[in-house]
Image (cartoon, rainbow, N blue to C red; front, top):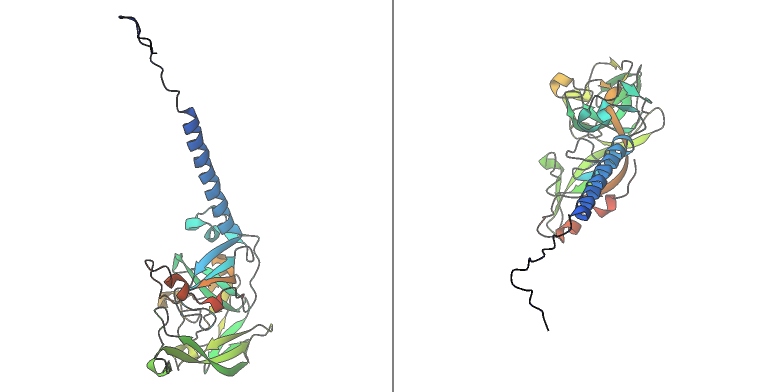
Length: 280
């Protein structure tokens, strides 16, 4: 049985408690996001960072559509190690020189907002020259042995350099088949390169790598703007070691470019599973 308050009696209104708990939760979540962002930035700047490969200049080792992890500590740190090239690190600290054969990520001298990837060929004091498509270091030819052709399926991420390299299989699919060679540097580092055609940079004058720089080349010798080309020509020229940002370490993913965001099963069929996990 309910009681009715007397006429004229004042009604009592209970005000809701202030949303202190809700505000505290929002502040805690914001603090968590800030801490997480700081951790990610520090980790990517000084430990390991992901990079994707958008070209074929490093065939056969790297394909368009590869995603790799790069170690950030091997060559020291500079402003190029930081997001947006923030000038917070003077010069280069904890510097260490790369080794011949290292696959390095660096800031393009002509446009430091771009990350490029090549292989270190020459160190300070080395004389580098190309004669008839064969690499020469300090006046000695680098051994170059013809091995089995490199083949890669044609896909949205891979088109053949020239029609003569295109092959068609009985099932109607196509692939690119390229002449492949094994090079071995003076320090014993071996890797495979492609020699696709006769090009103007198959023969170059001898150049001396200056102190503080390295000479880099793409493994796809006829399709790479590297130290054989000056910065004015769109290449790298002598790469300042301050531009180095990391050393390629691990292949974490690779796609042939045939996936569709709206067709989830294609995320798996487009993956090049056999490439994942490879080291450098």
